[in-house]
Image (cartoon, rainbow, N blue to C red; front, side, top):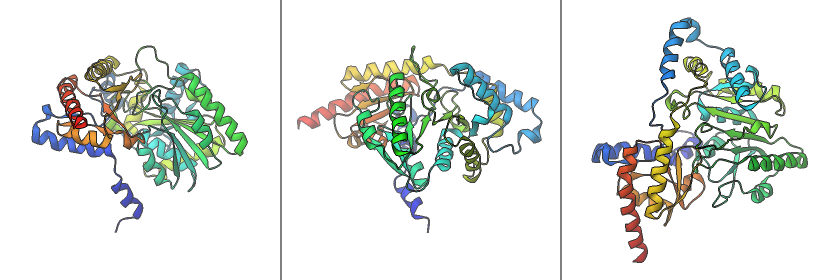
Length: 398
């Protein structure tokens, strides 16, 4: 008999992963070329050429026993130092290797941070719409999750609700910008207001409230959009980063935490993250990939590829009559549904279109479309989306 907690995890399994698996089944039935799978944020772009070069260089340069063996649970000191210097050059910060903890991607980074900070009954606060797996991470730590309602149509945080909802149990607030699922980037004005509220509430409650910035899409922004580096605005900030999207390395599971010395109880939080990495079973981030990303800190994927997909999908759907939030970052399109979002997703399956309902992100009435796919998929999908819209219109009339 498995644990009750795991029973609940299975019963409430990720809608995104379920769609992904369904897509593979559909491809076997209808042919992969006829299935339009927009479910999973799995980059269609290959990693930059520098990644393969770096892998070969690391294998050639590093002593095999050391390369494939254990190191400090927080990662190689030289890798962490290189990442710290890169951040300092880019954002005017003053980090060193002691502020960096290498992680098994952003998901592991979030779990390490939560395991370090949270007691049972503490509260994590998120802004709708939010990445649905945050709920599972909270449950795993026996923490409660509080959802600030969506601020439609801007999807910037609803500060009036946020300020009212903060309470002495609030230990962690998560921000995700560029945002999954909307593609919205929080402005500097937004970050300043957020920091002001949190500083006021920390004093009022005489507690520490940690702002956890989940940033796997930081490099995926379009035009001259700027993504504020949040440690510069609020002392109690921990940054979670992953190379899954910025370097198309989703399956390699490599990222890091930034824990600035300004955070409350820095020494204990840093030591706790090191220990959490071990006791959660990761032990350390993959050794080879640590060395590889350290050689590729200035590398990027071709953002123009995603931009062309963004424009083609946004323009194509709005012409048909869909109401879309224009994304400034990430590779997702957030679309309002003319009917219940779960019903819309169900109807879309008839056209071999796979989507994720907004309900999974705590914001019903919308769907998320991942456009990190081939342009051909968008070309195939648009007539299907038009036929779906026509069917819905007929259904509404009837």
